Image (cartoon, rainbow, N blue to C red; front, side, top):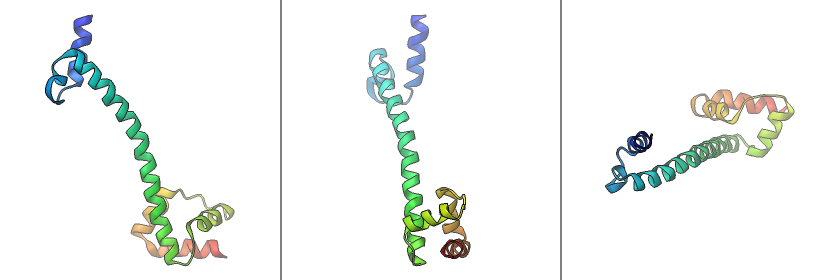
Length: 107
């Protein structure tokens, strides 16, 4: 069992540098840190994308004479259920449709 466990750890450290790919003690430590960082960075990735979507929407809103916060508030008041990801896609690919959305919430 111990051999199987060690073999499994070393399998996960394939591609690491120096002794961390071949020496069990170093490999175990390296995988622990690597998996911790992988978990944290998956969370950070979501955060960064949401921030990017907000920046794109804000820029498009300001071109049309509105701020981001007022735009999001107006969307909620008019029961328009588009999330930030979809809105940023619309801004990039179909700016004319985004302008129509802004006109509809300005009424």
